[in-house]
Image (tube, rainbow, N blue to C red):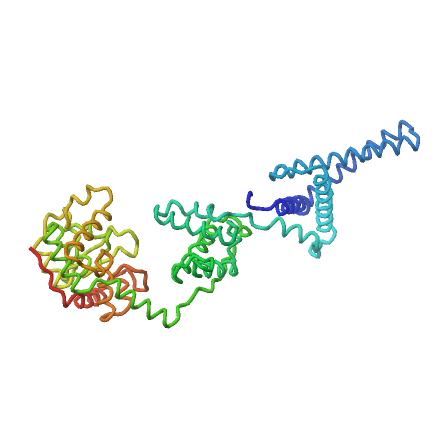
Length: 439
């Protein structure tokens, strides 16, 4: 409620008063009859005392003033329930508006009895009803809380960064602020140069910021109990890459992939400094494993399928798409199978799991090897996976590549013998020019 203006809240309250009267004709009629009966009894008692005309006028004026004061205090209390403190003038104005809303509701309720199916709500009644039906303001953080239990710390941190950027540019933090215009303005601000007041982000990152924030609307809508509380999902005109930018992106992706020479040099260096990690780079380069997947690979996960194809079964991947089967090509098979150990033991040294941060532990060793062999090209853990994907791009469909790499795609999760054959054929084209040295 803190993100709704006082005027909006008061209008919502007036709409609620109208609905409570307009949509309860039986109760409204009973209340009106009871009030009329009470007033008649008071007047009858007053007239039995045989007062003068001046006394009657004075009495009625006093009652009227008392009723006005009571209505103002009730209006002040009603506003206070919505978290709004009204001064005397504001309370009087709100009391008058409340009276109008209630009387309009009574008119609607009476029309239901007199007109039946021909009943039509007045224009004022429709406006008041619309005010009551407006969705309550929900903040981006509140929508994120609904999703918090499903997200990791890193993803949560990314969302908070995106929300902070939104608040900086749009100066708002509610879901209703996510409109087509504001989202388009936001992603173009992110992508504009820092010198011009923007963030200097690449188009893909800027688009991702907008899409991630818009996804919070879907999260909110999934938890709505009432239709009128749902928020419409706006469209976004995502920033598109020009042909020049597309070409530069392809070239950059190639630069991020480790060359065959780098892979072989790093493998030799690994044998010289960390011989216990001799299988690390082959697993990255020839199987496309992620940095977070290779350390948890056990010998029991390297097995034959019913067709006799040796494969790596990634049961423990961090994403649903990452849980996949990767056929092992002949080059990697010649390295893995002779070294098979106890099924429950890790393929890489088990001491990796004794360190505080496995990813950093491996990264430090890869950097140490790169320094040892004086490698200047791309040589981090992800560069080998880029090279794996690059080899696949030349020899299989995009769907097969997505399946092998654990990306989202249209290829079904069900592995038929025909699809396993297609996967196995594709991996044989990976690393064909590489000759790894090993103990």
